[in-house]
Amino acid sequence: MFEQLNSPWVFGSVAIVTVGACYILTRVGYVALEKWGIVLGKGKSKKVSPHATCPHSKDIMDIIHRTSNHYEKVNSLKSSIIKEQMRSYEEIEEEAIGILRHNFNGLIAEKLSEGESFMQHPEYFNFNLILKVIAYDIKVYIRACFAANHYTTYTVDAQIEYVAKKKIVVVQKVTDALNDYWRGTTVTRSEIFFKNKEREKMFEEEVESVFNRAFTIARDTYDAIDILNKEYQSYIDSIVGVKE
Image (cartoon, rainbow, N blue to C red; front, top):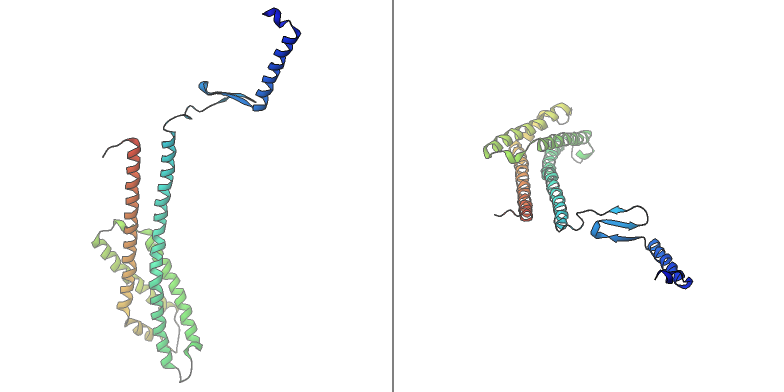
C-alpha cells in the first residue's frame, strides 16, 4: 500500500484531494460540530450557548414579551387618569366661565346708552382678560389636587368630606381673584359679587361634579388595572404550573 503512494500518479491525486478539501473549508467558512458545542472555521472557535436547544427557551421569551406588554398597558392606564380627569374639568370650566361672562355682560349692558355696544367698552375687555387669568389659576390648582390625591383609597364618607371642602375652596378662589384684579367703575365689584351670588349654588354643584367625576375615573381605571393584573398572574401561574 505504501509502495503505491510512491507512485507519482497516486501521490498527485491525494495532493489534489487534500488541497481541494482545504479550499472548501476556507471558502465555506466553518464546519459546525454542534455535538461538542464548538464551531470550526475562519477565525477563532466559538462556543454555542448551552441554552440554544433548551425546550423552555420559547416559554422564557414569551414571558418576557408578555411581562413587557403587561406593564406597558398598566403604565399607560395610570398616566391616562389625570388626562381624563382634566378633560372632564375643562368641559365644566368652559361652562362656568361662560356664566361669569354672561353675568358681567348683562351688568354692563344695563349701564350703557341705547345703541352702545358693551363689547367695545374697556371694562368688557378687562373683565375677559381677568377671566383668562382666573381660569389658568384654577386649572393649575385643580390639576395639583388630582395629581396629589389617590382617590381610590377614599371611603365614601371621606370622599363626601373632601369634595365639600374643595367646592368651597374653588368658589372662594374665584371670589378672591375678582377682589384682587377687578378695578372697574362702570360695573363695580359689589355688583359683580351679588350677580354671581345668585348662581353660587350652581357653581358649587359644578365643582362637586368635577371632583366626583375625578373619583369615578380613578376607580374605574384601577379596576381595569386590577383585571389586567389578574389576567397576567393567571398567565404566569399557567407557565410555572400553579394549580387553582
